[in-house]
Image (cartoon, rainbow, N blue to C red; front, top):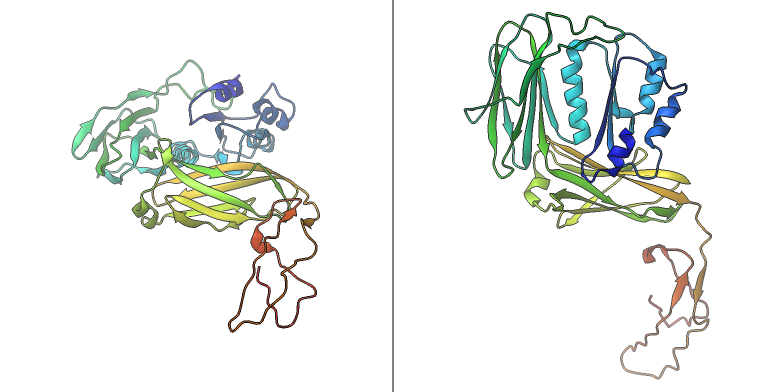
Length: 363
C-alpha cells in the first residue's frame, strides 16, 4: 500500500521512511520487501530512508532492512538511542539534499546562519535522559518563533525489545517548521532552559533540485552526452555567482566511475560518458556546496555495440581536370556518409586512395 501511495502521488518530493527495531514476522526472505516496494524497477519515483533501531548485532534484521533502501547509504544503523536525533537528522537531510546541523544544547545558545535560497528551516530539540521537561527557544534575527509541536514519548505500549520505553518518566521534545524568505540571509539561535540533556537537529532546506538528462538506451563503446542542471521551482537555476562560492561542485558518476562535467553556461553542465558494461547502469549527477547536496539518478540500459558499418553515396570522387593557374585553386564536393549507429563525427578518421602527390584533400 505504501508503494502505491508514493507512486500515485503528484508531489515532486516523495519518501518512504521506515523504522524498525528488528526483523519482520510476516516475511520469509529479505528480497520480498524490496520486491513489494518495486525498488528494482526502471524508475522509482521516491527516496528511501531506513533506520535500524537496535544496539546489538542482528544479521537477520539488517538483511531485511538493507533490502528496503534504494541506495546503500539510505540505510542507517542506530546503536544508541541518544544518537537517534543526530542520526535521523543527518540521514533525512542527506536524502533531502540539504544541510544538517546537529549537536547538544549547552548553557549558551547555538547560532547558525541561514543563506539565500533556503525556503524552510526544520528544527527539533529532544531530551536524551528522563530528567523532566525543558524549555527550548528558537529565534530568527532576535525574534522568537513559536514551536510547531511539543510533547513526550508517552504511549500505551513499548516495543518488542523495550516494553518500558514509553513508561514515566518520559522523554520530551519540541520541533519547529519555519518558512524562510529565499531572497534573504538570516541568523537563527537555538537555546534551552532546564536540567535535561538535550540533543538538537536542524535542516536547512533548499527549494532546489538536480535534473539529469541522459538517453535511456545506449550501446557500449558509443559516447553519450550527460547533461545536468539545478532547477529552482521548476525553472533552470542560472545564478552564476552561486556556482563560484561556498565550495560549489558539479559532478557525475556511473557506478562509482567519475564523468567530468563542464559548465557551458546558463546553468548547464555537460560531459561525455562511454558505456563499457552491458546491462543496467545508474548515472548519478551531484551538485553540492557547504550548505546543500542535490542528486539525480537516471537508469540507462546498455546493449552490446554493433560493429560499425559506413556507407557512402559514391565510390569515386570526381574533381574534374586541373587547369594551370597562377594561384592555388579549390573545388569542393559533398560526400554523404551514413553509419549504422550514432557516433560523434570527431571519432572518424578518413583515408583516400589514388590521390596525386601534388593534390591535398581536406575533410
